[in-house]
Structure formats: structure tokens, C-alpha cells
Image (cartoon, rainbow, N blue to C red; front, top):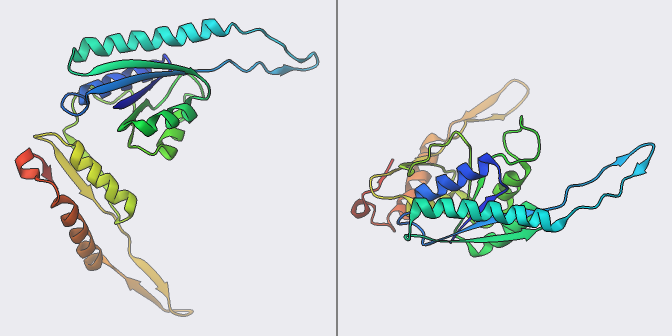
Length: 231
């Protein structure tokens, strides 16, 4: 199951359509999730804190309508190939999405939503999800092409996280696609005294470790039979 977060913004809708383009053959169920909360009414000196009545039913209805409309749009794209349902809850968006994603295989959010400052590269919700979700998370910018991903770029440094990322990318890749695995390192300079330093270039050691670790991971998948190239 893939979980898609929406807040009614154009960015969220774009992310959902991007997910739909990746879905065929990869997933059989998508859940469109809308998390709503009441606006915060600030204090206004010298009058003091303001008390304002918010119609919670109106907010809930708007979030439900948005989730339903987006789900219907995805059904129009995917037909009966993928089951699509919705979930609407009140609360803090990133916390709920992270919690709901425990039962998902992929969490998809837009890079920017309705709130925050437009100049920020990522919104607070997408940042929280990317940093704290326990499942793979796709943060989709509005500039992302809505088409099946045919090239996956994996940053690899030998850590547990990078190994998991490579394994996920290999499984996610579809026939005809390419997985590019990249490791970047920098030489280390070790001071040996007031006027002496040792320049250590671990290129050979790094390359050997890289080849050994990636060979073990990639050997577990019959990539040639699947038509997936790894470079």
C-alpha cells in the first residue's frame, strides 16, 4: 500500500499524479490521506488574546471533499488496476502521516504545501516526513515529470541506510530502467607536526569495499531477467 498525503495544494496533487504514474505493476492499493487542523488565532495587543469560533465540520468537510476529488482523479488514471481509498483525520499533518505510514510501503508527499514560506526548498511537513518516516518517502517537486521513473540514482557510502536504499531501488526498478549507484569520497589530510602532513587517498580501499558490498546486494536479484541495468 502507498500512502499519499494531500492538503488541497497544487503541489500535493502533482505528487499524487506522479505516484499514479509509478503505480502500475508496483502496488495494488493507494490511500489518499488528508490531515486537517484548526487555524491558530493569535493574540492582538493591546486587546489581548482573541477568542474565535471555528466551524470544525466545515474544515472536515473541505478536507474530505479534497481527498475524494483527488482519489477520483487517480481512479480515472489507473482504472481498476489499483484500489484507491481515502483517510481524513484531524491533527498535525506530519505526525499523522508518519504514523499511518507504518502500514505502507511508500509515503508520497509534495515538496511544498499550502503553509509556510514559498522561499523554503521543502515545507515543514515534507521535511518531517523525509527525516522521520520509517518507510521509503518520495518528496515530489512540481517540476517532476509525471511519467514512470526509468532512472534511479542511489547515493552509497557503505552505511546501513545506503545499503537499504540500494536494495529498495533495485526492487523498485522496472524493466528497461537503470539504477545508478554513486559513492563520493574525499582525501583525508592528517597533520603530523607543525610543518608536515600526510595526504591519504583511500580510492583503492573505497573502490574495493564499494564493489564487494554492491555485488552482494545486486547478486540477490536477477536483474538481467528483469531487464534492469545497474551502473
